[in-house]
Length: 138
Image 1 (cartoon, rainbow, N blue to C red):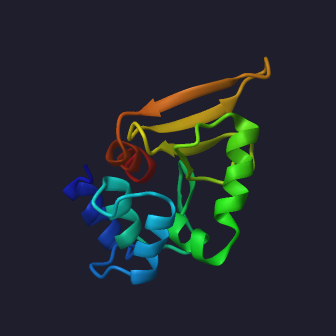
Image 2: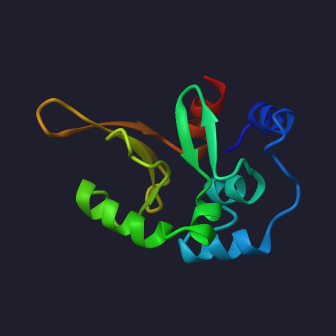
């Protein structure tokens, strides 16, 4: 759930909007994301093109990227390379080797970080709202 505290924070930063973009609704559908889910609701109302930035990193505006880049094909290749499930929605660029993905099947958000032993360490949030609170408010 997206908390009131988070929504107020985003409105104060002028990155939360009441209007919903029809193009973004279509993008969510192309990614098999329900507009009624927390992740869908967030991406329909939050905009800081092309990425959201906080002290915790950078988060893709996936609808913007789905419309304006090769996001879908690029992330399919990235998911295969990093052994991310097919239900995974890539939320960051993974440029530094680590990054976030949302598991559309479980509703959880994962941070994958490479370790020295050529394996991945994963930190997990139970839902997208908790992840957003971490990303923007912590």
